[in-house]
Length: 319
Image (tube, rainbow, N blue to C red; front, side):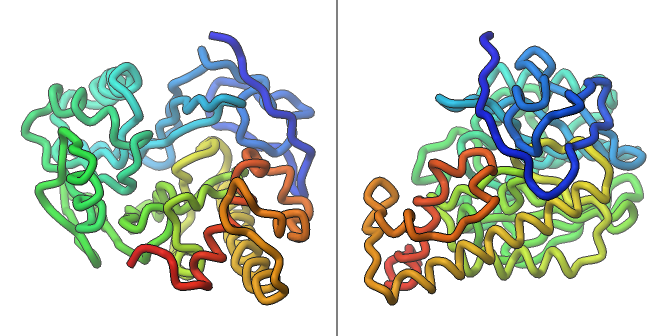
């Protein structure tokens, strides 16, 4: 497959390090685009061990302009496996199934739908076919969304606040810390290894997609996560490779970007600068995005974020 590319300027931090066998180009800019790190579609999927039995799994998500990653979390215990988020189609789900079977001969016991968007749930029929007895968990809001889309695999258990699973001696906390990207977002926290899988609440080195988001509530959720006793912050999109310190620093950057989205919306809206939609947003030319315009997908996502903030300010977001 042809390698896709979106040039990004270097930001304030050093280039990403990686725990995989793939070596990043020495001069790669801080970007989530594969080509900016001398990576190809063929280099994926890949898996990064975060702690004993805990793995971040990356496969590609291809857009018309570039390719970056969609991530899952795999938790292997002595009594079975837990998966958080799937992939977006049957082929990628088949690769995920093969990886899980290589990591453990034990069955998949639970699947957490942390995001209800297609690129995280589209492969669930393939996963369900491999392990038909696995229990699927989501928030009530995500269940409603997926029912409305006639998704073939739906959650049978719901979490709207907090639920703790204990499997093979491993505690797995499923948390609803607030509406963000989807309105039904969940995160998964492992207290022993201090791994926090953020799903689509954390876009690493990508300007966040607010197409179905709740900007101020998203910011509040990010601040809650930042206050947790976590060492590893794992994104739903953008590389999961690197040290815990690098991932945590980039998570802090993601919080700052969301702070900026909220602040710019509140600054520009009272001036009368227009932004009736993401496709018609003259106010975006006045927004002070600064170096964050170098983030992957900023050209698309910055006006979308501003339009979404205007909707929030005007009380037009879905309840």
